[in-house]
Structures are given as structure tokens and as C-alpha cells.
Length: 411
Image (cartoon, rainbow, N blue to C red):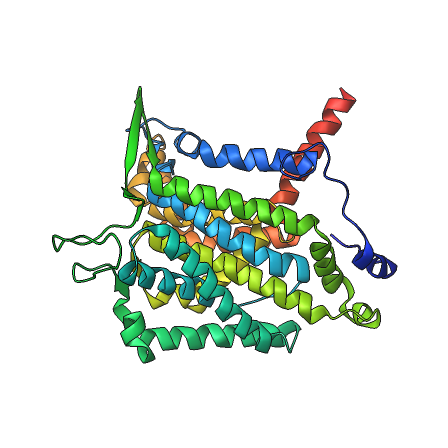
């Protein structure tokens, strides 16, 4: 991050060159290569990592290694990575990124309905159309900065939601949304027997899975998840290159002192617009992958709460860091899909060892924070992170690692 307490740093950063990337792979430094390998391992081994408890055990409810949730982890990780390129580097806070996610989803579903059920053209179309829409929104919104920029993006998102919900019903399907139907006849590779087509990759359906049973453990390897996982790896690699590039340095200069940047004769808007479009294309990629995994699109993806969710993911994980958005997305989606399912019956099982009166008291205390009350727990955790860990979960991990290093040195 650029040192905001020393304005003179800003004048030097636009002409600075990133450090040589020798010693790493794919043009990355050794440190970034290590980070890339960690993400690669997490993605490839997710079915094992997310299923630590045997099937049928009391703790199995905390397993998250099933395809639908794993896909959400990586797709929203991509969404948050893209948002972080805008917010983390430039400081421009967009409350309208869900619009680009939704536009990408609609572009992908129409590609599958009209052209082919192969997910690759649909994903490409989602990126291109979302990028074009982002360019228009950014050209208008970036005439203002600060809270005015945020309100403009929010307005565009809500207008997009309203258009998708009611005005553009023939294109968006309105409240019920769009999905693949047996009446669809794509130009290439559509079913000829009147059945409903399935999203596929050169004939292999996204839902194809292989289950591996090891003792009491069950691990599921899903094709759709690994396609999304590869997309996450590519998106993460590109984000590293952007962060370390001269372009990334210019974005940090915008965040540090935009007025001083103007004095140097450079035009910040050119860089902020580029970051905005790149961020929107990441959102489009996430939207296209959502359709590839579940061929149904509704306007709720464009609602303002979806935009707020990616903001929370990024800040919770660590805005301006590389790993933060992925951690934040995984944390929130885990709470939304796992913690929200814990009910009173499960709590009674947990506290069954207590006397009846104490058991009921503990259930009454804990229940408001889980199940339907998981948002309350998330809100408290978010507040604690903002107050005590401004750098998010990444900062928390760094503090723990530094403490272990000091203890090792002292020992």
C-alpha cells in the first residue's frame, strides 16, 4: 500500500518500476509464486479440505465440500477479486457491482439459449457484455468521486434491477427470470429429442461428479467446480500481475493523492476507468460461471444487497490485499450456507451433557446468533474486524504468524 502519510511518495510512484520478477514462475516474484501455489493447492484439494469430518458424525454438518457450495466459494471469490482491483487499489467504492454480475449472467444464458450449450462461449460473452456495460456506467459515474461516485453506481444498479424485473421482461424474464427450456433450439449442439439441454464443456455436463469413499469420509469431485476453480486461478494470477504492474502503481497513486497526480500532468480518470472496466469484467466472469453451474438467471442478482455483499467480503478479508477477497468470500458463504442451517435441535444435541435447565438456557443464549440469526453474528464479526483488524482477516493471519516467529526466535 502507498504511504498516505508522506505525500512525496506519490510523486515518485507513477514513474517507479516494479521489482524484477526473477526467481519465480510465470513472471511472478518468489513471494507471489508461493501465494499462487497456495491458492492452487486450496482450489485443487478443496474436496478434502472442506470435508474434514466423517459422514454421519455429529460434526459432519460443518462439512462444506459439496459441489454447489464449493462453486459459490470460487465464483464469489472471483467477484470479490475484481471488486478489490477497483476498491482496494483506487479507493473508489462502488455500490453497483451486482449490476455487472447480472448483466454477465443474462448474456451467458442468452448465449446458451441461442448459440450453444457449451459454457465457454457463454462465459466469454458474459465478460464482453459486462465489460461494455461497465464502460458506459464508468464513463458517467467517474465524473464524480467519493460518496457521489458510490451513489451513482448504486443508482445504476437499482435502475438495472428495475429494468430486469419489469421493463425488459421479454429479455430478462421478469420476476421469474430465465432458464434453459425444452423449446430452446441453439444453433450448435442443442438436444434434438425435445428434452431440456444441459450446460456442458464439449459434451461433458457441468453436473458430472465422481465420489470417492475413504472409510467414513465421502469426497465429491465435480466438473463444474473445477472449471470454476481454473477460472479463479486465472483471475487470481491476473490480479497479481495488475497489482505488481506500473498500471497498479498508478492506481495506488490515484488512491494516495489524486490531486497531486493531476499536477504532474497525468489523467487519473483514464486509469480509474480502466480499473472500473476490468473490475466489471471480473463480475461478468462470475456471472457467466453462475449460469454455467446453474442455468437459471433472475433479477435478484442485481439487487443492491448483492453489491453490498461483495463490499463486505472485500473489507472483511482485507481490501487492497491479494488473498483477502478470496478469504472474505469463503467466510461469508460458509456462514450463509453452513452456520445458517444450525437449528435448536442441533443445539440441544450439543448441550445435552448439561442439566435440563442449563441446557435450555445455553440454547436460548446461542440460538439468536445462528440459524436465521447468522446475519447478527456476521455483523458483530464485521464490526470487530473493522475496529481491531483494519487489514481484515489477512492482517489477523499476519499478526498470528509474526507472533509465532517471535516466540520461535525467543525460544
